[in-house]
Image 1 (cartoon, helix red, strand yellow):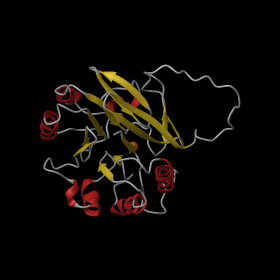
Image 2: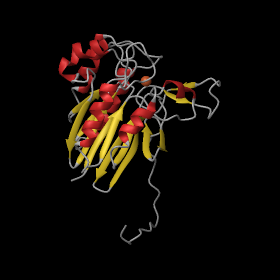
Image 3: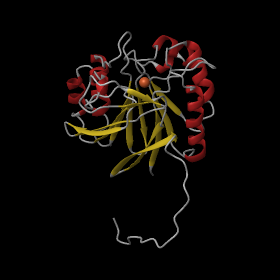
Image 4: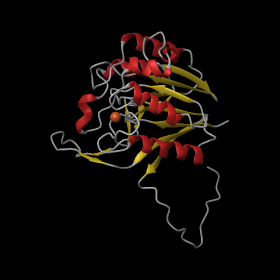
Length: 274
Ligand SMILES: [Fe+2]
């Protein structure tokens, strides 16, 4: 009973036919969907972790809806700073907003609890988890003390020593404190920074995926250095969960994934059990 799901983030869709930062983000998402159809059609679901639309127009959400209709697995969604919640709800339905007023969600599957948090806040680029959401999070964690938990949201809470550290989760201490009420947080997965990273902070594991839009080159601890936007990879995360292990793999569906010839020769296989 292995849990498997895909996380896509930072799709930055425009209305069909329009580009974002010179990139055809619709075509890039089509490639991501192709990768799921070809290689992850057996996954339990796909999460879209925010920045679904670049400018939040209803037509961009219509575009998104049309493309993800090809996904052969269920889709769970939360929002990012580029999204416009009213436009999203207009296209996808008001049911996506729960009692917190935001697009939060809980999923129980194969012995895991997955919690989606909507860190978007109108008018802000950084992320906000409101008090009502943190109360909701603590309650959902308290219900799942017997299970491992994975949290997925748009904004990273942890600083990454890069320029975008000033637009992460605002006041992350309350978020950390809520997470620390649970004994088995397996991952906290975010997008937002357009960078791939893993970190441990306050004893918790944090991951960011580069997402589907441009990626960012960075200078460590030089926030004044100009960033360069690079067109690849288009990246999604593949999360695999067993009772004792949670793994995050990164699938670059654009760039960096050209197939090379197999090298023939002897291959030593370790026989010992793990
Ligand atoms: Fe983004």
